[in-house]
Length: 120
Image 1 (tube, rainbow, N blue to C red):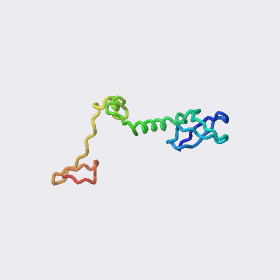
Image 2 (cartoon, one colour; image 1 turned 60 degrees about the horizontal axis):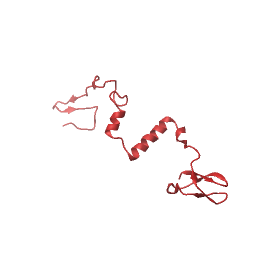
Image 3 (cartoon, rainbow, N blue to C red; image 1 turned 30 degrees about the vertical axis):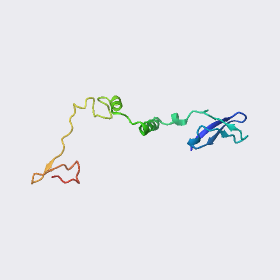
Image 4 (cartoon, rainbow, N blue to C red; image 1 turned 90 degrees about the horizontal axis):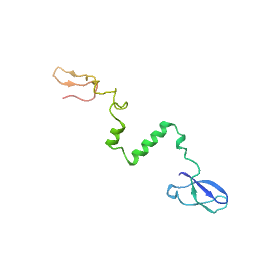
């Protein structure tokens, strides 16, 4: 359950654990028992996190309700993107040739790709 902040007119601010379903409901002051409205007095600690963790939270939050469209992905990962290609122009570099073996019967084998598969 999250911690919410409340402001009592007589006693001042206080915090309380409440279910998320009751996030906007007033809470009774622990000192004088009068109902106090919910207020936001301090900033969330989210921005005190390391940048990697903050970025992971942002990606996780975005993907939970609205995944990136192909157009958005292409806009953020243009040609020559460091995470998607190996060099500035990926067409300049060729893929290494696959290792192909042949048995006496002429069957092809790809020993590095999937050694558990049997070739036909």
